[in-house]
Amino acid sequence: MSRILSAVRKHMGMEVAFISQITDGQRFFRHVDAGDSGLGILPGGSDPIEDSYCIRVIDGRLPELMTNACVNLEALTLPVTRALPVGAHLSVPIRLADGEVYGTFCCFSRSPDETLTERDLSVMRVFAEMVGDQIQQDLDDLNVRHLVDNRIDGALKSDALQMVYQPIVDVTTNCVVGFESLARFMTEPYRTPDTWFVDAASVGRAVELETIAIRKALIALALFPPSVYLTVNASPDVIINGDLAGTLRGLPLDRVVVEVTEHQVIEKYEDIAEVMAPMQKQGLRIAIDDAGAGYASFRHVVNLHPEIVKLDISITRGIDCDRSRRALAAALCGFAAETGCSIVAEGVETEGELAVIKALGITKVQGYHLGRPMNLAASRQLIDVQNASD
Image (cartoon, rainbow, N blue to C red; front, side):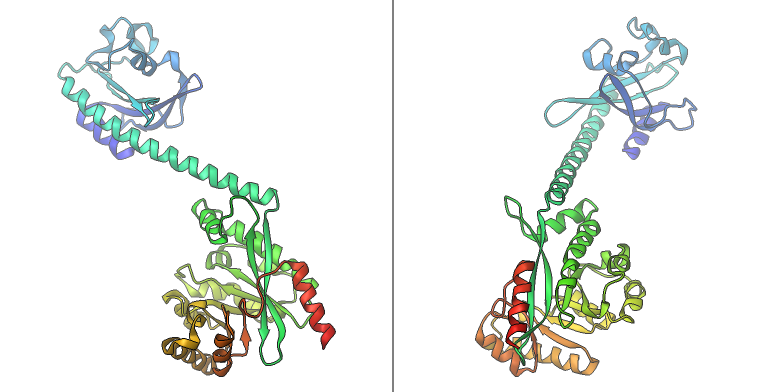
């Protein structure tokens, strides 16, 4: 907008160019280029529309082009015409996609300019159309943001954000040793959790929503026995810019695993290390989620030195029928042995997949074959049954 105003003002030889919005009986100066005129017209300023040229141009009382406003009888009804005085003046309506008038695109000078022609006015109209398109896009974006904000607010107020827990099983003992907490949004129409978090990121609320999910998940920690750990998912943004340390303060960190999600690029790994190192000294473990699913996850593994690497479902699915998947899983097992971290295989859904995972020496497994995500009551019941059978 600023570049357009500056270009028009200089091309027309004017002192001031501005974009106005007319609403609620007022004219608002949304964008202004006044050069070094010293006229004091500032963005955000306003005045009653009936004191303005703009409304008179829109309703036809004033022409869009005046080479000298001081000779126009209608313009002379406004005190500002003589007070400045107003000389050359061009103003065209800015219309939105539905034809509604948003305001005006104007420029003026205190000196008359008899050289101005309809050709100059045509240039103004072209720029006004460009401005109208941009304003329409901005309004559309703002409406989308409001919709997303309202959707998120509604989910939080109605407690639609719920946490479920998927068991992580030690296949050497068939005992549940941990749970991964997963967000679910219990609203209609159903939308996947990924969609919610992507929407939240689009309006700058990803850290807020993820933090709320983590806090909700951590409630379960006090209800599980000390032998069971809890995994929470955290993006690099939450770790670096959120209050993760405050969220975890006072908890038994040796029973907490933070899974660093794969989907976000990390520019400075030392920033994550700075946040996590003090908590790791208290027993907190780092896990890299979706290992093998993409380049980012491998970078996380190499740079964050995690205690746990989670083998992605894209590798475990069909691993009993695919040599390439077995080879990649075996390579990651070798990496884990070399670096001292452990492997958790995600997404195990069949007995055949489980058999191959066991043969590779992976002892911690997660997937529908061993247990689907469940609510907190069901997860506690699972642990109670397991303890009763021991």
